[in-house]
Each structure stands twice: as structure tokens, then as C-alpha cells.
Image 1 (cartoon, rainbow, N blue to C red):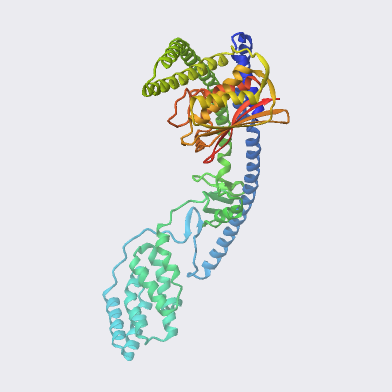
Image 2: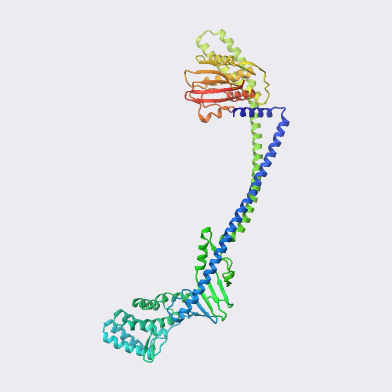
Length: 587
């Protein structure tokens, strides 16, 4: 990894040299072509996904088509079963008026026959004689007088048998006496059933049952209170089917849908079915079972069926009606929207990628310009500082020879230390500027590393008296530029004691050769470098967060010089026991 970093830095410096303008132009052209290729690739990526989308859509369509076939078959079969049930219900109703119709209608001649379609109309008031006889029966039943009940019931029934009344009139007049008789328990069970359900023969005449009169009268009477009393009476007696009366109100509210005139089986919407016979008679059945069972048939597929192939405003032949999944209707539109979206995303992606590449190129150019301007400015300032620093150095040396007072010499010593620090900073700045511009030509000679290390440690002790130093390792030499290598070792050693906050500062330098690589390790006994700062300290003009002075170029310059020699500078270890920086060079 370190070798790749060094080669990358060398390549960057080669491109940055003043004479490398053709190479830089070729790289810019290559980057532009790469950006255009990336834009085309990003733009084509959504279009490449269309095959997968189409395959998934085709698979979904096959699943929905299978569900449609199964749902349609179930719908038609159940609709036919409902029409067969309607025929059976009509046949039963012809013999038993209490048969529940359960949504079944019979039509003939264009009119509804069953259930009868009446308009609400007022009924005639009961004659005075009929009211008086009914009141006598009611009073006798309330008095629990069996003899009076028998006498009054005979007179009441004889009158009803001989005097025919409108069904609604007879029904309303009979409710009170029958309620009283059933409640009294004095009525014979057989007679009670005859009066309520079967009807009663009186001589040559016939007294209609309460249920028969109710079925004839209630649809036109439209009186829910009377219907409730009839139903309650039948329930109390246990003699009849009160469910029929629960549906009488629904009959009156039943919408009138005229069946078609052509023979066959038909469907209107998804809940009304008709079978028209050749003679024009028709059966209608209102039921939601066919569509419910059609939905249940494809529930395992996770879709819902609706009767989308029929028009709810006109009759459709049953054998052409289709129960289709709801998703099937919108699948084609969804696929068109997906295609349009993919095209739009592709174009937008291509535009954004091209724009991002352009912005990245502009940003890199701006950064290079800023770095170049900053580097040139700092180099110019540093160059201008060399002359006054040299003058300060000469004047300090002259004063040192003349001063004898200890306090003054101490002050002069601190001034000389500051001058040394400034000279070191200026030297780093100027050298970094030359390296960054590619203006450094290596003057390679055989350099003894232990000797270089010893000189760096001695300079450190001169700058900081009392510093403990240690030198060890192999006495090896490398081909390198001695002045630049001296600058690197000086920076590493200077950083080791200058950024150390302990009072007993110690610096050790070790040289080792292994597998064609020479490693010079510089270790201090400081408190370590914060993990968040370890990558930042190698950037130009960046320093660790310590109170020591410096330009922030020492490590960045050292790494650049090492890269010029095919090596690297890295932080090998850092912790509370200290930090170790390693300079690696090819042997």
C-alpha cells in the first residue's frame, strides 16, 4: 500500500512539472472521455433495466391472465347456479306463499309477478259490525272467559265467512282479537294454526288466514307497524315463518330493473342476473355470491377480481362476462409510465453525471490554482525572510562575543533559538515550494544513515539542551540526495522533541535494513497523537493540536522528499507511551 502511495505521488509530481504540459493535456482529455463514458453508462443503465422490467411485467401479466380465467369460470358457474336456485324458489313459492324469495323475482309480460309490485294505498275502514265483533272477542280473551270466547269467536268467524272484506281491512281488524286470543291461551292449537296460517272453512264459506291476508295486503298497505305486529304474532304462536315479513319492507324498496327481452342468461353489473325463457317469462336474482367466490378463487395470487368487462348500465350476455383482476386493467398503463420514467431517469442521470464530472474538474482546477497561489505567496514571503534572518544571525553572533552579563546572554540565547526556528521554517517552506513545482533535481550520493542520524540528534541537543537521545541500528548506506535526506531526518527529530509536552524529553533513532527496504525509525516519549489527527498531520500547513511552533510543512515535505527517492514516511505507532515515525527508502 505504501509503495502505491509513493508511486502515485511521484506520478502527480511528474504531471505537475513545467515541461509536462502535453502530458497534462492528454490526462485532461482522458478524464473528459472518461466523464463522457460515465455519463453515457449512467444514462444507459435505466434503459438496460427495461429488459428486467419487461420480463417481470410479462410474468405478472401471465399470472393475472391465469387468475382472470379462473375467476371468470367461477363467476359464470356460480351465476348459473344462482339462476337454477331462482327457478326452484319460484316453483316452491307457487305452492307455499311463505317460501322466502331471498332476492328472487319472476317477471311475465314485462311486469313483476313475484314478489308483487304494489303501490302504497290507503285501506277501507272496517265496518261497524266487524269492529264490534272483533272488540267482543278481544274483551272475552282479556277476561279469560272460555265460554264467552267460544261464543264471540263463532259469531266473529261467521261474519268474516259471509261478509267479504278488503284484505287490508280484514288484516287490520283481525290483529287485536288474534293477539288477545294467542296471549290468553284459550284457543285450540289446531284452530289457532288455521286462523294464522292455513285458513278455515266455515260451512260453504272460507275464512282466510292472517298470513295470507298479510301477504296480499302488506305490499300495498306499506305499514311497517302492522308488518311487525303480524310477524310478532306468528313468532309468539310458533305457527308461521316470520322471516317473510322481515323482507316485506325490502320488497317495497326493491329497485325495478326490467329484464332483457332476448332469451338467454344475462348479467347487469356484478350482482343482478337474469334468465329469459323463450316464452318471454324471466327470472331475476340479486346475489353477490358469484363475484365474491370469483375473488376468493384468486385470493392466493394476492389480487382482487372485478367484473370489468361488463357495463353496469346495460345487460350483458353471461357467457361473455369476464371477472378480471383489477391490476390487469392498469398494467399496460403502468408499463408505459415505467418506460417513460426509465427514459427520464436515464437522461437525468446522464446530465447529472456529466455535470458532476464537469464540476469536479472545475473544482480540482480551482483547488490547484489556490494551492499554487498559496505556495507561491508563501515561497515569496519565505524568500524575502532569508536576508533579515541572516542579518539577525550575524548580529546575534556578534553580540554573543561581546556580552558578559549572564542575564543578557540568556536573553540572547532565546533569541538565537527563535532565529534557528525561523530559519528551519523558511527552509521547509522554500524546499516544499521547489518540490511541489517539480523543480528539485536529486543529487544522489552514498549517504551513511547512522551518520546522518547522529548529526540530526546532535543538532536537536544543541537546539534543546537536556534532551536525551539514543542512536542504534545497522550501519547502512543508501543512494540519496544527502541534503534533502538531512532535511527529512531533521524534521522528524525536531518534531519528536518539539511536540513533546513532557519535561524529560527523549528521542531515539534506529536504522534497520530488511528485504530491500531501509527503515529509519524516530521515536519519542510523548503522550501520543489523537487518532482524529493522524491523517491530518501529513497535509501541508496542518499541525497537531499542540502549543509548539512550526509551519505545518515538516511531515508533508518529508513525505514528498521520501517519495522522490521511491520511499515513504508514515506514522507506525502512537499511544500514551509515545509515537514512532518511520522513513522507508529502497536499499
